View (spheres, rainbow, N blue to C red):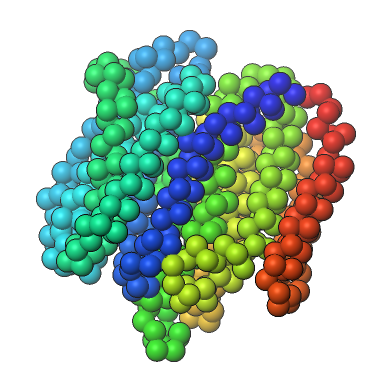
Length: 479
């Protein structure tokens, strides 16, 4: 139980460092949707989707590689840090200079001609993110979750303040959406100050024995990350291209993308929970790999992860009638139907991350690449088939089918190479029941808003009590 409690505590701290900052960023949605129309918000959505994919290449899979090699019994952590940081800085510098050099023609390709400065800003943002990626990973390895959270929180407070200043005080329509990117660039400069001691202590290094092994381990992880991010962002990249003309009467494809991107923010609440858990769980899995009871421990971790995510699915899914007011313009409300589907999709993405422990601990990271490539195929195929039929709802279903297929494949392969006694039946029961409950509650039409809100909270509290009584004995069982 001490291990699970420690993992839970670290997840909470990483939540402060990832969920809370991104939740504060989520609170910028009403500001952005009030200032920018859906077409302009669609441009923001598209640009950040491209950046999310490219950013994986900047990192080159070195975070996971650093954890793997720094936790080996014979490892010299400082040396592994220097080797990892050298790869990340080298790759990111080359790519940043490339994007800056081609910023003008690239702005034409992305249909933001005349705003090449935005490409330059994004290149610098990705460079800074990459430079501090391994220092942040080191904090996770050293169990310095409080320091991790402090850095993330200060950054987001700067970001929120700059957004408020630029969009409320100093707004110039000629800059427009550029303010969102400029605020992020300035805020990320803080990270360089936050890690100045770590960055100054870093020494570029290459080891003829260790570095090739690290690169062989990292390369499939990087490909897996690219494929995974394509799965996550593909719908936002292709919705504009594959949506039939006038699918939403009188509205452009950019308008639909803006609606989808804004409503996607609610699903990111589940994504943030998954991210916080992953930050804590990845070093946890590696550090407990040698424990003879680790399979049972990992199974219990996954079971409670599913329960927490189901609670979040229910809490968000049945309270959209209140949460929708975070969107600054009522025009965005029409896309709220995608939220429960996307919440469920992110839940399965979290399950997939849990089940990937088997190929990370057995050094079979190439399986991760294969699985995520299968996910890419599923994503592309179902987006192509469903977008013309159902618009952005089709994109949502494509994401769900992608992550469901990846989690299923990873589970069955993992049982062959690194068996873990997951509670599959109970997990599936929780997910199916919670999803059905969300749709049932939302189908109950109560015109009085206060009564509707009260009904939803009664359902949520009743669900929490039921979970407690069902799980209290299992939680007390020793691992």
